[in-house]
Image (cartoon, rainbow, N blue to C red; front, side):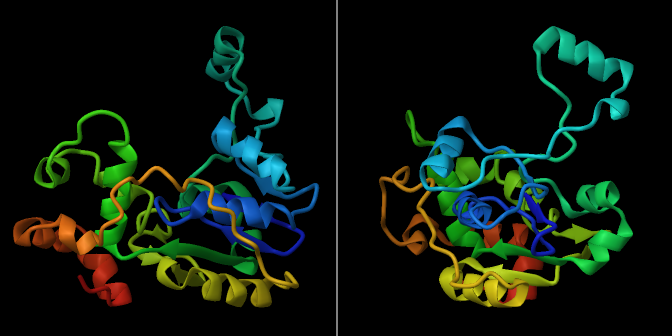
Length: 230
């Protein structure tokens, strides 16, 4: 998640939609007071190598600590986070207040649900023997795409962002956002997590009819909202 006071935008990071690459590119334009949440150590290193600003301003001030927070800090050495990766819209709004929330430009990315499911499938099964797609769809893991998807950019069942960008038109959508928020020259995207998917065949070849319908059922809201087709 990135909240930029400099450009007055909030980027809500969904899952399997090039979010880390987008964050890395956006961070190059962020100011000292902007909020940039942490990503993995590997991705943070790559972000710095590419000239991006590292995570900052995401920790809670000490006066917001509870007794339990202090205990956790003493035991683990981990400070309390006020903002975090994949933070949903409701929590962001509650932390920053209505005035900033309503006045800043809010955007996220969405992706064809079958393609997105295939991406998650290969990401989670990049090591070891992978289950069948049917077994994967019947597990609890696909729920991650809902929590870090439409549930993240909705509040009380209503879309809470100003723009849902399409992953399928990634650069075009980013150019449009940059024009809206005032970032000149657009964004140069790194491929932060490329290389994990060994099977490059079209996602349509990964689903039988039953699996295809299962995904359609899971993501009926997104399909209705954005008109995605198999």
